[in-house]
Image (cartoon, rainbow, N blue to C red; front, side):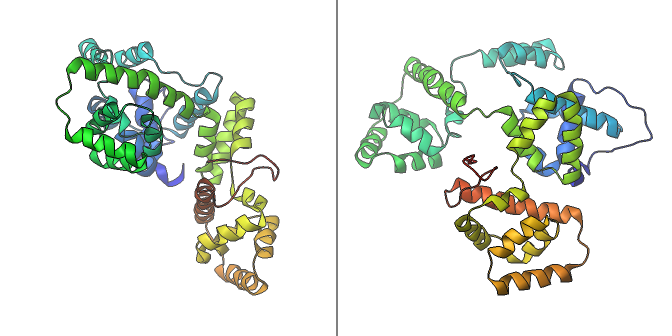
Length: 347
């Protein structure tokens, strides 16, 4: 985990103990650190934040064995058959493990309450092209109601994608719109929940091994090796699937000629020497062979002048290059593969 655990007190001078309930979530968030933990904290509600914060305040020392056991257990459960499944009953049981029964009842009442209580906020987080593709097949009056309920900036992006005549009709109806009856609005919310959001969640659900491969890609080398080794003891099949799905710096050597040229134009030339200093000879030769003789010679001279470089710095820069490649692939500017064949990785 490297620098991400700075705020977590790791002590070898205390006895191991079992982490239970909210303690497990608290330690996991501390281990993720500020950068990687922020997206998780932002999705917690006020009750969860207060509960975890209170637990953090009295957590005490955590031993390396406790941290590693927690991480391996998390990875194993997430990558095992069936992965993690959330439903109403599981949510109620989880809340009941650390909240008073009256507060659990109040929260569950909201969850089971009127359909689509949070539907408009959810729609505001759906990609505009996905939402527009769905709405273009609806009646203009229906679309006008939907766009009037979501964030204005998101509605603007959706309108700009819709067919021009259809979008203009929607705008006119929004200008003439009167108050929508409650029962009509609830019926519309229910339709959106069952016909759109449910289908969206099914089509966008990622395989748990793909998710963990992305997480492992962001580990430093020592942490990656440690967790893969521990996971192999728990579930060799899951460990092998993750290793197969991981896209590493060495995989950049499988780029075709056009793709590597595009990558080289988009990376910081000043960091190339550091990235290649920690790579295999085959990877170095691959990049040198895709440069002019003069550029390759200058890069080799830069590498020789670097002297010793921290492995952490090499890992960080290699990760940057991998992320640049993934971004370029997502925009369709390059094609990246794992095995140099037809196993294209699509992002």
